[in-house]
Image (tube, rainbow, N blue to C red):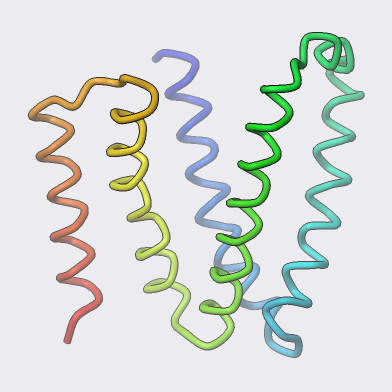
Length: 140
């Protein structure tokens, strides 16, 4: 198995755990408070990872454009998390996570437009099946 696939599968497992554990942690607090606590831990874990794996040398390679793009990505991540946690607080985590993960369809379109990644019949079929699955599981 290619390394990127293994890493993506590990990410998938942890992402699935994250939603269920977070929903349980939101029992007594607002989505915003829960997100603030979670983000504090994420911040600490990510910086620990940088030092443990001696990745601090990478900072020398950052260009202003890279910092700008990563900053914009942080903004979109923050907005996504804020709305995700608010939705999880009041909705069923299984349905909220399902809708959130359908963002892959947006990713497929944007990666083709801005990163020149290929859209193939497989991409179109898979994206369509995701949308169909989303509609089947979330509509009455």
